[in-house]
Image (cartoon, rainbow, N blue to C red; front, top):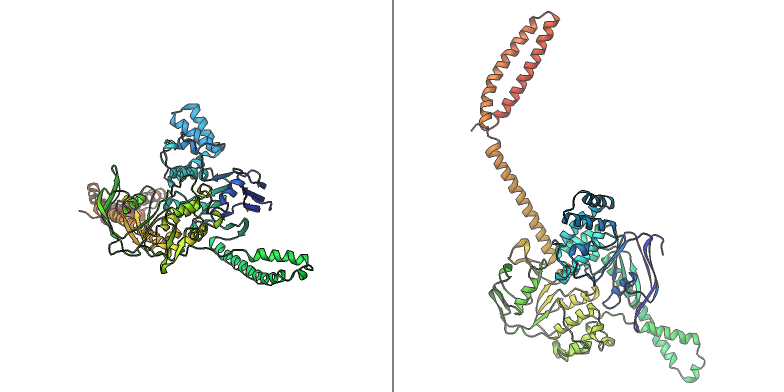
Length: 627
């Protein structure tokens, strides 16, 4: 390990029962490096992070941090005291600046004066608390956390997750571990966080499925694949390129091993008399070649030629639909007639009504006004962001069979429940596992499979990418690109939206209740929106300048009553000063004594200066409108 590493991991090994997650993992992180840990769901990404942070210790190996390194960990289970306020939760800890800010805020809130307030003030100075407070205000504002007096127990899961993120960002540690930092953030928050982390000087190790985030923030990728660790010094694009090369090389090695294996197998099957003289080293080599030849390297995508229920002439019609809760209107006046194979992405801030709109479309809720007309042939497949609720003790294959024993495909073919599970990256060894043993991402994938098993012709996916690994996402995208029905996607995954949707519905834009429709994918919407904001800014600035100009034209360029009087007096004063100057010049020409010359010369200078000033003021007032 390099001496300059802020983190050194050596020979780390972890098992769950008989299952080996990783063995002899060794790597280090240098100061300022921003590294992503990628792997398939269930491969042990979060477990490795927890082992490094000693939250779930490894079976063997060693983890060491450089002297004086302050680190923090954003993980999925924050474990907050539900009775604490947001303020107390954010500003708990041993950091002196944290304590100073907390004490100062408490002193202000309690109306402290005199020595007590001065003590709190001095502590802010000494600990760098003012910088800490400014950073806290920026982070809390960007994550939409404003009322710090609220109790944690009254907040949604997404809000509590944002508190956990705010807490580690405000602390600004030397080394930060992030497990899916973009979950429960809206798109504006993700854009801000991406920029914030890219500019930060801290060292990062993160697990995230957001591929744009990986591309724009990380300069190192660590891949955990089949218990082995591979390191790539570059961003996500570089990783994909080098991983493809590694996969091709592995295929070449395996194909060569298979050709050699066939020859060696013939030799091993030779007659018993010949086998007695076989070389032990050649027999050992045979088994080594056999293991290389049996390696499975092909990706097992969701390539399924679906044969969904037929779509009739009428699909879905939204007619002047609105939804509200109490006095708050989420959206109003939405009218849309869905067309065949239409692909819509829905975006908006948290709480803007995205899930409520989906509930109206699938008729799980009634609109406040308007109506939703669903065609008779529509079969919905609704993937909820909250996932499926699986009964205790249910096994993986049972969750699929309770929907159907098989799935019909085009051309009269069928896929059994077991075959479908394998297509969805569940190997045979997992089919009879209890679902409770699956990772969060594996449960999401199983829920998605249940949705697909119903053979829908109208798919609605509400945050399908949360907790899915980047490899599963690539495969899911390929499947959805081939899906022949209608598709609605609500997602904070910008890359996912870019690949799949043809236009974007935006809810709650600029506080409006209108659902705005932008043609194109998410990036095209973002560009259009930024151009729109820029144009609006230019128009506002132009209007402001025009108003100021009008005001100047109307008032500031007109002579006031006082200026009118001054202008009239100046004309007379200029004449008087001109005559006085001429008289002094004549007197100066006729003077001979030194004292007289000095006196007249001084008077002439004063009169000339007064005349110049009067003429300049006359010119200034003459340019103004006399009316």
